[in-house]
Length: 354
Image (tube, rainbow, N blue to C red; front, side, top):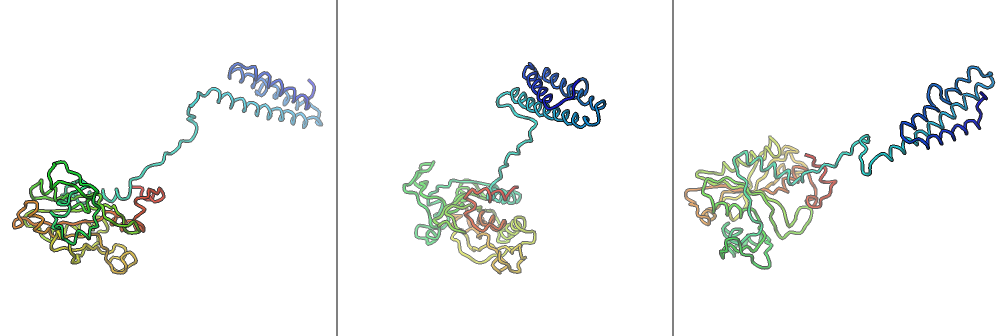
């Protein structure tokens, strides 16, 4: 057998290419490959066997030609396998050998997370969750809450009135809804009209006021208002309820204080402050160096409210409170701009993974 040279390499590659093109199946193609690259009785194996009996000056050249032919055939074989696999795969088939793609996971909105946590705290205290209409009539939103037509508190609410009155479900003249509710206290009025004491409810929901959108204000926000009515309910019950809420919502060491205030539907009325959980009341930027953070308003239910819904104010007492859900979320998670809650920016929302 003559010693292999460059022309021999070219001829064998041409023969391999031609035989591979004639292969009718992958099994036939494997036989062609083994005829040229197999360990025994193949072209490359026969060339490597020639090295042992060749003159020393030719050994290196024979090895180089054998390796050149082997590498070239392996490259052609790899290309053939890739084409065969691509042609055998059905259109739209999934390559199960590829690494999987992790789908993006959605997250609950921070306001939803905080609302659910607040509801869980109050339901464990025995409060029921109730809801009501967002479009309300003046009687349920104002008159029944000790705010008659001339009351200045109506101006304080900056009410959004509808352009045309809409008659409610009952068709009664006093059930004409003409505004977007300014607080969820109207739900409490409706509930008291339909139920006898004792009552213990919280009313979460969206409310609307004529505010400009800025860092701390928005024309739509969420409230959770609570109401407890029964015989012998006192201010101590109100303080115990809100203290328990603050310690579970913010910090086990939180303290609650009441600052005198005014609400037409409660008497006495107070603002609710909790001790700053960042500095433990020592004073820091979060609490504006006061050691206290305001979270809402509260008070004992005014007798006029009981009279409006048909309760005997001589027999029953009760307390009510209102806490802003955005306010709690801002304080709990140190959000600097209330507008972030409504912009649906994923960079913001992805910071709340739980």
